[in-house]
Length: 128
Image 1 (tube, rainbow, N blue to C red):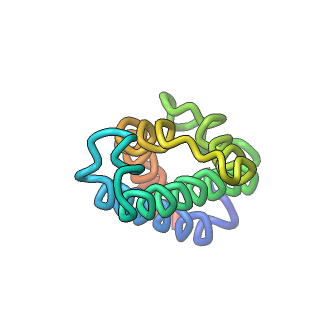
Image 2 (tube, rainbow, N blue to C red; image 1 turned 135 degrees about the vertical axis):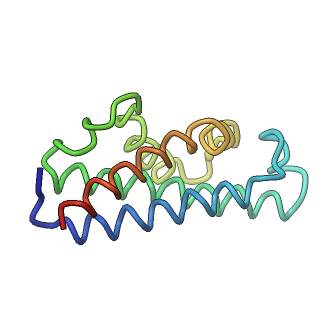
């Protein structure tokens, strides 16, 4: 399927890919959610990681809207509603960021999300 805005979507997907890789790098030595609270550096990492997780959720939300809900379902196994919803949770939670959710997302959900992102990059690159 070809989307008239493929170049813009592809650019967004590449930004998502870079963000996921940054999150994985920043959190390489984070072993549990408590690590975020033990040092000022850990607290900064939590804040920065939360912002990137939020940005990724927002980006997928935009992609889904631009493709009228037809692109994301092509990669099954990802709870897309949750990926898009975590953005709202972070954005509207303000000072209620849950370190456990961020830790779990970064450690457990990002590898598959990276695979999905790369799948879409390959798919859209082939259509250009």
